Length: 139
Image (cartoon, rainbow, N blue to C red):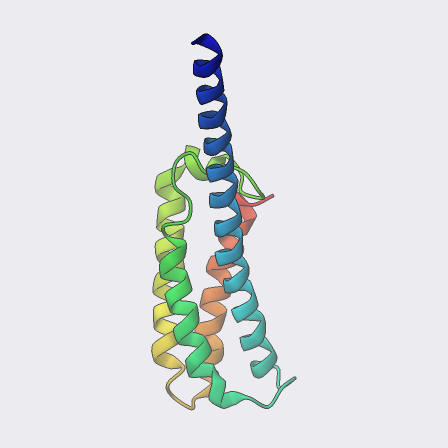
């Protein structure tokens, strides 16, 4: 009976470790998607590609990803490039994620216009929220 209990415990611990690793990988994929979307937007704004009509679509995707990012750092999902300060300073981190979501939502609205100066400023605001978080909370 003890061997069975030890076996069940080992499987339970293994499942928790796998779940945590899956959570970390999921978070990394979401954050990579944000970075990739910002990279594509940057190529358009720098005129490295002639795709200005894609800005509104990319801005909408970025706003949705920023909203999703608010839920990919649950307690117990430490690991990857995320520093422990995320969970130690959870209120500050949550405020920063809200700032990202707000900046991305603003960019979504601005991207519907053809005003490249406003679009550039809105993208810059998103970028500043990203850098602020990476500076404090990412290895």
